[in-house]
Amino acid sequence: MKKVYLGAVTIAAIIIISVLTFNQIPDKNSGSGSIPKHTTQSEPGIVSKYIDPPGLTVHQVALNNLYVEIPYQKQDVIISKRATDKYIIIDIRDKKTGKALYTYGESIGHDKEKLVFREVQTKKGKVLLQMFVEIDPIKGLITKVKKTEAEYNPQPKKIETEIINTGSRSGQFPAENVELLANIGLNWGNDVQNLYEGYLIGVIKN
Image (tube, rainbow, N blue to C red; front, side):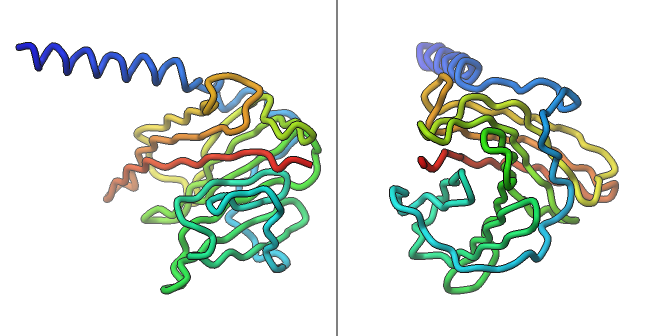
């Protein structure tokens, strides 16, 4: 009985911490500022050599003004960079197999407003997990998360679940790092898929 009680207390504590740490972003139809949402799969773009800026760790990969954190060390993966007229896109592949691991992108321009996204492969296509943020490039901080949303290509017959949360690693803003976590249930009619994905970003100091 004591073990059951302790288990219930632990679960309740985890839920409370989650609620306090992660903030549900306003409805996806709310205003998103001047940055257009990225609704298409990554374009080929102009490929250039990836150059690591100083100050990043072995797990941090630069986009443009932002960086993403990956679970691999950079020496163990192949990193390639593409530029379109609107986005800087980074592709990360396994060094041994060449398998695509991650694709991230960041909008060009808008010095203090940025759209960052991650492409997630699904059974039928791709989902773009997007985050609109305001940054302070001088201090290297994220001052606000304005909006999050998911874009589907192709659109599933039904979206069973779409929960997208963001949270500051420090628990407050401005923040050095912000994490996006998504729980998405896709129904293709004759098939279903549940996605539990996310990513963490930070600002590269000028």
